[in-house]
Every structure is written in structure tokens, then in C-alpha cells.
Length: 316
Image 1 (spheres, rainbow, N blue to C red):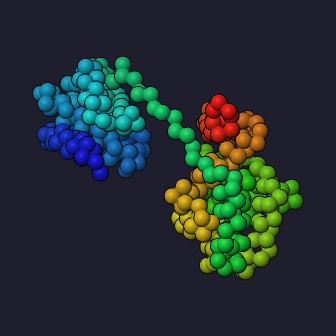
Image 2: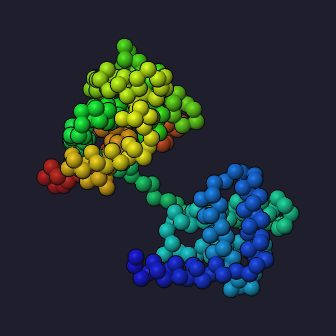
């Protein structure tokens, strides 16, 4: 950890030493936010940190949270920028403050919401990380050890890459979702939205092998809904798949730090675009409700074109 980061955190901690009344106000507000919106423990903890930070800053001005004005919040955000806080951190802070001040305004504790003129900082759009086609090929073909485990993991990886599945979609797949005759997979995505995805020949081949050679022996006469089951006959979970994928990456000579289930999904989308896939069709395959979510993959394709241009153009 750098000296600069340490200094920032020390100053932030110093500003969270607030009086008992302020602490009571914060905890009361968090309880009401939890009751109204069902916020997670992690979200509430983030809100608490943000409100304590602002309260500490305001105390140096002799003010409490309820007395803060727009100028105070502008100054606090400005101070955070000078201290090196990232735009993403400030965006999260502003979300916390908006939730808090909207709540106490509704209760009549303040007359005006001091966050109403504050704009979210513009966040850089992250470019999804994807593996190259040769890296995916190495990952798929790597030896996974014993034959049943090799067949199972190969079928899971082939299906994930061929269909662009999220890891939760993969491990939650019921056996009834597979239509081998038509080569289609019925996937239940986010928001319980169902989509049909073609599997492709290679994924279908390995899935058929798994269904013939592995699953019957593991399930026996029991009725098991899950498509993929482990050696104990239980449905795979995300953690199991994550560990197996990292081990597979090591065996394939691909940096495990660069490999994750979602990176495979990103690779699926990127490789389709590189081979001329239509953006709307890709949106349907990924199960995105908005095209803007799919458009992020065009950034990777553009980066690839730039690299090719620099490498091969005489004036690149």
C-alpha cells in the first residue's frame, strides 16, 4: 500500500470521529432505509462509512448533517478530489448522500435537499476483459485429470463459451433445459427472463458424452433436476466451478489471474463480434435487456482493430 493511500485513509478515519447524537441520526436513518428498501448489509455499511466521513468533515465547520448546505457538499466532494479519491468512490458517496437527504427531507427534518444540484462524476466505461481465441482453445483442450471429471468440465466449458452463459446460469441449468434434437438450450437469465440459445456442434458433442458416460452413473436412480452434477451426485455450485476453472487455466498455460467465468462470457461476445455478428443478435444471445449493455463489447473489437493497424500498417 502506498504512502499516499495510507495518508488518505488516515485522514478519512480522523474525520469519522463524530459525536453520539450524529451517530444516532445515522443509525436511525440506516434502519429506515433498510426497512423501506431492503438494502443489503454491504450497502448499509457503505452508506454508514460515507455518512460518517461527511459528518466528520462538517464537524470541522461546526455543522451537523441536518445543517449541511449545497456549498458544504460541493466543498466536501472537492476536498475528496484533492485527496485522490477516485470518481467511482465519489459516485458511490453521492448515492449514499442522496438516499440519506431524500429520507430526512420526507420526514420534514430539513426543508431543502442539499444534493439536488450535485451531478454524478463521469465514470470511465470499463472495457470487458476477454481471452484470445487461442487461449480459449487451450483452456478447452487442457487435461483436467480423471476421465469423468475431464468430460464434465469440458462439457461445462464448451457450453459456457458456446452460449455466453453466466456462471449462475450454467450451474443452475436443469437437465430439462437441453434440447439435443434441435441443438438448443433454454436459459433462465436475470429477472427470470428466458432465452433460447443454440449450442453449436462442439458443445453439443461434449454435452452428449457427459449425458451418456458420466451423469447416469453419478445420479443413479435418483431424480436430480440439475444438469451438471459432481462426483457425489450433487449439483455443481459457483465456487466449485471457479476452483476447477482456475486449475484448468494453470494446466492450459493461461494466466489464472486473467481467467474467470465472466471472462469466458466476455470472450464469447467479443469473438462473435470479431467474426461479424450482429449487435442485436448478440444482445438476444447474452440476454441483455438493453442494447447499451451489449455495445460495450464493441470497445474491445475497436481496440483489436487498433492493435492490428499499428502492427501491420506501414504508417501505423
